Amino acid sequence: MPHLWNTLPRPLIGLSPMDGMTDHPYRHIQKRYGNPDLIFTEFVRVERLIAGEMKLLRELLYDESQRPIVAQVYGTAPDAFRGVAVLLCRLGFDGIDINMGCPSNSVAENGAGAGLIRTPALAAEIIAAARAGVYDWQKGATAWDVPGLAPALADRVEQSHARLPAQYRQPRDVPVSVKTRIGYDHPQVDEWIPHLLDCAPAAISLHGRTLAQAYSGSADWSAIGRTVELARGSGTLILGNGDVADRADALARADAYGVDGVLIGRASYGNPFVFCAHTANPTASGPFVAERYRRLSIAREHLLLFEKSLSTWPGYAFQRMHKHLSCYARQMPGARGLRRALLQTVDAAGAIQALDAYLAYRDHK
Ligand SMILES: Cc1cc2nc3c(=O)[nH]c(=O)nc-3n(C[C@H](O)[C@H](O)[C@H](O)COP(=O)(O)O)c2cc1C
Image 1 (tube, rainbow, N blue to C red):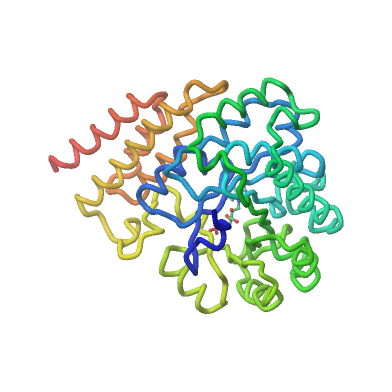
Image 2: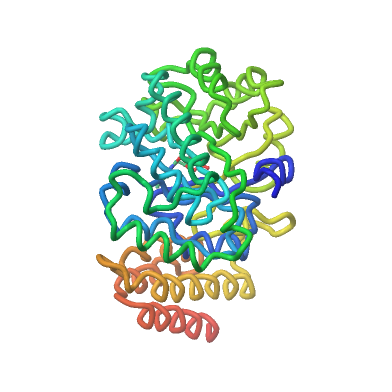
């Protein structure tokens, strides 16, 4: 089977990983209605997976419609990355992405995520360890062979493995990539990117902000353009990310900065159409009745899948769906009332009732 990154269109337009957002139901809906070329899971901490934290497997749920799908992981312990790489291959992922960009205190302050920008030697060790794990799997390792892995979690992974289509149970090339930022407290692509390129990741996705900026200001696409120059001839693909509004914007930026692809994150909230070629962005195109039905029928499908696929997991709360419902309601006529009604719901039946009531009322006006 060919290497994932070589099978993708250029420029590729993918759904950026977003913790708390890009879970299984969200990815399914985005793929179905927007069809991004590539999808990432939320990030998962490798040390916690190895320790057997079963609920983390929820973040790694996916279905076959979401391929190609890359699992994103983070942490600081190379051995844990090696073991988790075996798990991810056994779970059938098409690629493994290492987060070196998260700015949140709980992640970066203990050296993971964007914290790794300050420890390039450890970053290199982690990439090598993940690749060694893929190699272990290609040589026949299973979850049961991962040193220190909690047995119950290994059993669950192997049960999922047994249900995979045959072609994903065979040894194949599962590439290791990195997602990062342009620097820690100042733009430093000229030092940081060559370090990463020395490790030959299959791809680098670059968010054009520093850790210190978090999400403030605007993404520096000139630093992304500079990264493309640094990577020329290396074999590593460069994906730009940050503040991309929709597909047309992604294509324009790919053209202007020469990136191999673009990731879109926040603009996809409540709106898979950001990935579509000729579909107007519903948030910008006004309150047409047909369009309103379309977005709300997607919301309905999303919330039903949310309840169906996640309600049996420990700690489930329908309220985690509220942020998505609020985004679907955005810029609808009478959005405030609709949102208020949706945010009071505690299950899928209640949310559907609120949607139906809204549509019935609006249609009579
Ligand atoms: C709520 C939220 C959660 C995020 N979680 C992750 C994550 O788990 N892994 C990651 O690499 N980036 C994460 N990001 C960063 C996004 O992938 C992306 O780099 C950033 O939002 C900029 O792209 P955008 O302007 O298109 O949203 C997150 C961003 C947001 C807003």
